[in-house]
Length: 76
Image 1 (cartoon, rainbow, N blue to C red):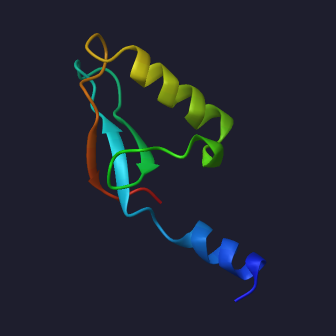
Image 2: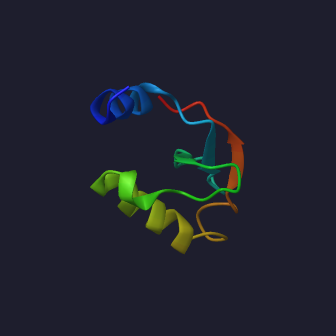
């Protein structure tokens, strides 16, 4: 497999895990980001908007979002 084929295969493979921030109040949707088993998010592979949402969710833990949980990946 060459690098290009490998990259395309990787992009289509859903993440094995996601880091999910559940809202403390029901008015806001949960935010989920692909991560590894330890909950580490690869910020370089997130789009601009997702990266901003990730930093926002981390900033407001305890006020707007609960502590994040690592879950089996369901992002597509």
